[in-house]
Length: 314
Image: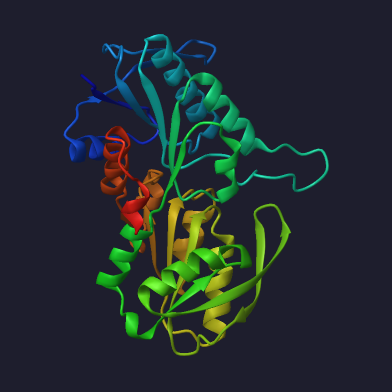
């Protein structure tokens, strides 16, 4: 008889617990310890022989620690004779390094894919990849789950759609924003963004009419919030009314939280719980967190039952 086992890493215990409650499956917390030199030790205290195991672990900050922890958990499960091991990685670290952007640079997203496969993962489930082509880096089944259903539900219930326009913060995000605009029956506009260096962006021009409209900037992640703040300023200069933002992954590298808190142009920043907020971010009232536990739990349940996962979004 097939059985499901949920294993939680340490990066996002709250999300893991919510997924466990949705599925009504007990959560296994492996014994994870650090040796004096920082090496990770893992022991799975539950019998997983022949079980279909789902390991929930975001590779968020500290990225290298959480990634190594995930790999070691997977290896421990493989050696404990688990039937299958699915790595549920709500936030896939290193996803922005998906191609050679300059000579003699790595493609680290591919390296991470190789490490997960060699460690023993038989499937990977993640949410809102920064670049869709990362799916092609894997030779095992890979599911890219979208957070758009929960974000759209919140926007529909809490924002006035009659005067709303969806904004892409750069050219690369137009396809994502077009999906939101279609579902919300709104128009879309684009920020012409120029980068002057890593993590440094300067918003230049707004392509589209935003005068007098409520704008929602949609992106897959917010890192240092430089792009977001510059986009909000540019929109306000072009006559926008209220300005909101929605993103799946609240990476919030320093000084993102301060930038958001001090940006008077931003009314609210809507994010999901793929990455847990820092104590500082929790104190900022304009940051609103919505949970992805329901949709991830459904994806896990359908994967276990060999049902369609894509039907969640159709």
